Image (cartoon, rainbow, N blue to C red; front, side, top):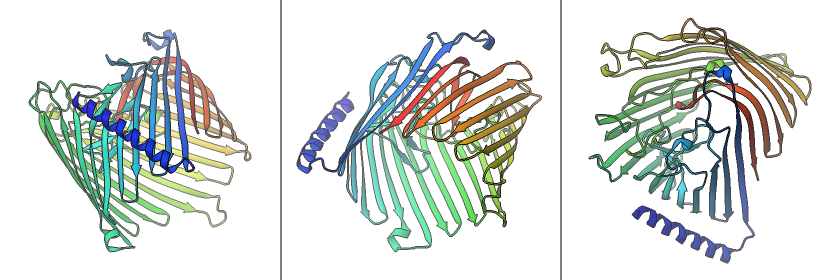
Length: 522
């Protein structure tokens, strides 16, 4: 309650200051921007799915964001409405779930060397290993901080940032307090280096809350470095945290640590990158009294390739926050034709893997692989009209995250072709096949997409399980775009599974329905 009162006073004081400044400065340079997103689904009975489906026949997630800028001062709000929340979104499963509420509000002042922000804000320290607040509407995740943050550039290349507030947890705020500081040092700017970039960053975060547990104070630390010279980039970060429970039901508290390293090299038509990471009990909650995907203080991304093909995303990898060792490597090579500028080929190879790190994670006390994906693809631009893509991926994953012996193997083949008849009409098609002797067996998928530039796009797709279930997961739809507005209407059957973004996942149950999506900005 004390923080709530302090925050309210700060926001009121900030709004008064803004009003006075606006009155004095005038509104000649002022402008208002906004965006609206509405995602609504009407659910239909489908006995072929074999599941009950949602209790309500309708769901709708809605977001209205307004920002006002007048010189150095800006303010804004975000209103959210869940009428009710879409099926499978955790925000609609909370005891304090609200159909409509003020999700965020802020006022900020920014100068050349100083900025202060009062209200709700997003931020990140380092790579997010100890702290990251962000919004992902596809996951239904928003862990913004309500409070105050400020940054100051003491000199060219030296910046200090601080923050204090309480985190958002779904429709309300958690009982914890988040305090943090970040120091960023750019030696290349201080010494005026042109060919070399050398940055250092150190961060500190404290989570404090009053409850029945002994772990009231949790401290997290991080240190990172970033070096670039010509085509070479090297990055590294180390993070640690004190004793903490990674989930509310955990029986034992653990200290945590993480190491992240990345190397990138690029020269002309060749580029390569490699990443390596170890995390040990680095899953950190906003509050010990909360649960769910949204109750996350930091961000632990998966080191896996992000696909946009249906069958390649059938079983996405989920990070094991209790501990894992992971790596990823990418190699790109572009081969250009001497005859035509529009004729070239892009070859790509990728590998990612993850393994357990603790004997307690395996029933035999050893170490096991939890995920492996080896894939290659070739993107061929034959001329101005025709482009084809061929992809092969071999995915292997453990259903018990390495605890028990045995894993599932899938071989995925994709052929993708795009043909442009002229500047207005285009046709794209996909054929996909997943071969597996495990889990649900073989899958077949296809997509046809017809584009009428610059406004219309019409598509139809289907995924068919030729193995265990024999079910079709079809989808047809059309979208219309004009300016900053896009409307999409679709009908289809959706398979139960995990929807993931960078290793953060939510479970989406199976359903059949009609989906209307509208996004616009001004």
